Length: 307
Ligand code: CP
Image 1 (tube, rainbow, N blue to C red):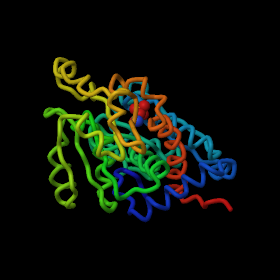
Image 2: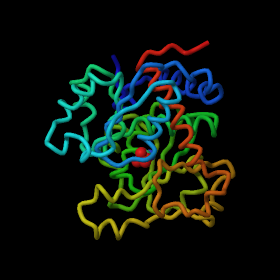
Image 3: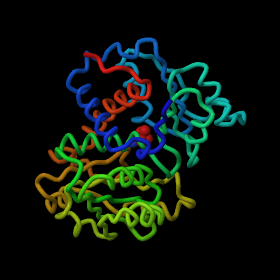
Image 4: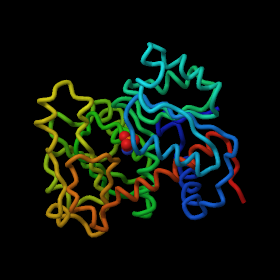
């Protein structure tokens, strides 16, 4: 039995197979309508979510399975003090696979150690968000046509943004990747990402404050929201929340074939005037998120690809 806790749980070859399966699902959706008949997905969300929870539910329903779960800690027995370990042992009696989001780093790992069904980390605190990374990889591969040989700008809250940490972890395994890390000093990537991931893998990167200066060299711009829920005080959040706002003027500085990604939700960091730019890929990204989650559910449940 396998889990998906971190993008590195799958080799580059396994991720390649999963993305190819997701692409086949995208182009032949009806073929997959019954491959998970009789299977159940449990969504255990201790933190708010729109895309991740509902895309998992949509994915399982599109495969013919069914879903159960809770969408906040308060509506589960966590509110009465139940541990994650006891919850997952219980859920293992009800479902075939579980997707879990929790505010504490490492929660999905703890759950996986007590689970008798595959556990998918749907976001653990400021740590990792591997299924968002699969979504990002599929978006980049589908739109840019490759996953290597590119300069990726990551902009915004690189300290608390778990999607950024997961994406860096995953992208360093592809050839000729260069990062431009665009953040205010207070929101730079954590030192373990800088030292243990970037430097340890001899990845070219620079850390800058200015988005305008970085724009012309980027093949991908990955914007992120300042993560209000992870700040210790509101004053710091208010001071930093609008540190970068991507607008039409900034888009004029970018390559014609650059793509803008964002895990969403957005607050102010991408002006809605950018939405009509053909390089704005963040709502296509949402759609790709369903196909990769369908592929991941099939892979973890060891469901055969239909003919
Ligand atoms: N991208 C993402 O994780 O969105 P939600 O918080 O809405 O699930």
